[in-house]
Length: 513
Image 1 (cartoon, rainbow, N blue to C red):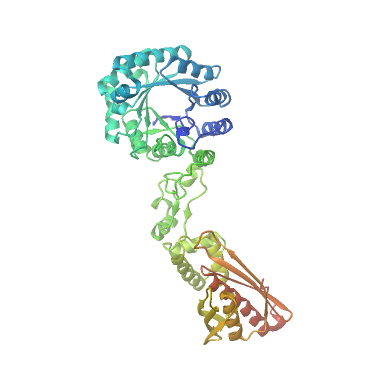
Image 2: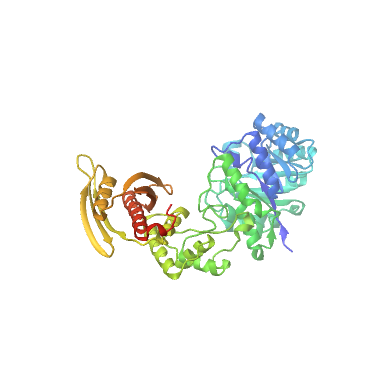
């Protein structure tokens, strides 16, 4: 049976220390309630002594959020511990978390304390906190840069004073996974009363190994991990809750451990924290990044369509995400393209698929990403049942300040190649005048509308025109990353509809709009 690792979420305390990530009281309450739905075991709601706002946030969360233990941070000072208790008292499940540094670097340069003085203060404050609550946690700050023998002495002393959790922080993200695992093993082997407390770890991500360090600690016996949603926190952030939870769940065979996290709530929680803090999740972020379940390679897409496990070690549904996405682009293959169309209700013949896929690949070479609307336009144009009396072969326009716009156009007209040059008031007008002369149309252009189908400077532009000839008005559509080409396509699409109407007469009964 897997052992359960406690999840201590510090998004509302350490996470809020990210520059620009401060939350107001209502936002903290909203996040805390979502963390409860997510299934975290402990919520560090804030640092009660630090400000009236943080005090009130800790108090309200302790009173209103059901499920997790609610914790307040407190420096190893009497006033901090007392203030933490004032914020927590009366609530059903509470913890006081007190800390002081144990590294010589901090004791000498920041605290101006000797080792003996720091140990004595740690014991005094754990004893004081234990007088208020049964659940007391102690952290020796900068533990990974502390002398190991001294660290063991401090941990033994605070456990003796009543600490039920001892948290080992890699405060500046200095340790490597091998070193950190070895440190946890050393604590288990050299602190005589360690079995009376849960070993916790709190890893920072300065060297990008916070999650790896936390997992290494779990392998060596840690029973609690301190982490944040999206890995936010001081400097480069903390260990990411979603990565830890899914790492343990996915590789339960290796770690022999799991958590109480309701993983289906992960995506919702990640988005809430991102929206509240304004800290955008990077697209390639593990588990919750926009690309985490997106597949662009044709080889990967083909494998995924045959069996999900070929390229996905987790189901997107397991984190509350609807499904994987196939990113349609230049690397996509025919199999993925066909499936993409079938998922949207399009059943194409082999010839239709070949035509649409060829057009799709040409467009994909021009754009970074092909959007749904782009594909809709391809289908509209390529599956058009109207015969192409007029087909654009090539178009070249010249336009600019101090010159008359000129268009050079080559058309296929009923199987005959035609080429002509013409002028106009602008590049589109020059193209339209030239096309009108080549087709000898008697129609009148009564509407011309341009819109971007998708965002970005590489967006496809769609052009819609309305053309009138006698009693008949038709609509033409064209799309291309070059708006002049899209304009020519739209005009020729309308002229082809008119020509078809004239040849078929009133019996055609086709809706061209």
